[in-house]
Amino acid sequence: MKTIGDRISLKNHENYTTLIISTKIERWKETLMLTWIVAWTFCGAVFLYFLLDQEINKDEKLFMFIVLIFWAYFEYRIVKTFLWRKYGVEYIKIDEDKFSIKKSILSYGKAKEYFTQQIEPKKVESLKQNPKSFSKVMNDSFWIIGEGAVRFEDKGNYIYFGHQLESEESEKLAKEVRRVLKKYKRN
Image (tube, rainbow, N blue to C red):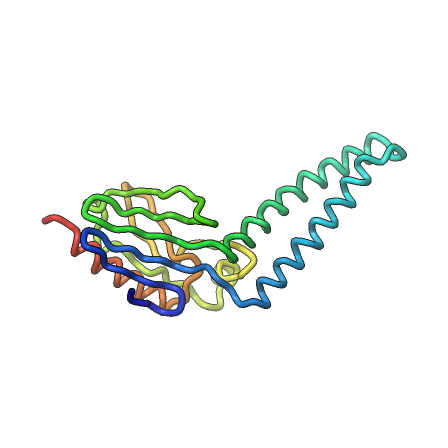
């Protein structure tokens, strides 16, 4: 097993290559997210209590129902992000036929597959963003899953992977994926 940076490991098997990208964050960030989930869940319980309260009128019930819809959406997002940070892994498997990317939480997740022969190694690139830009800061925030730091083109669409990698790690990952693709591409 070869490591590329702190979060990426690579293993060459007989007929395929696997890359594993960890999504772990520091313990204090994990604790902060868990605290946020507990507080947000408590707020939802309060909203639900008032929705079920018999002493409020129809307009207030409608308002509380709408608030609960927004609450449920953000509850889902933060719980999904917390699980992604605690138990998530990106699996990339490259062989002669397929290039598959699986975003897995507790081994659950569906792999997206692409034909290795249709991916141009030179089009696998690390994304370069201004480190002071708003989009870069938001994408690297630990409370969201974020976008991938490496991409390739498949049938006119960009496919992203390597979520929230630092610039140096994403460069190394892109270089390694290009090397592996060249190895498996038929001429």
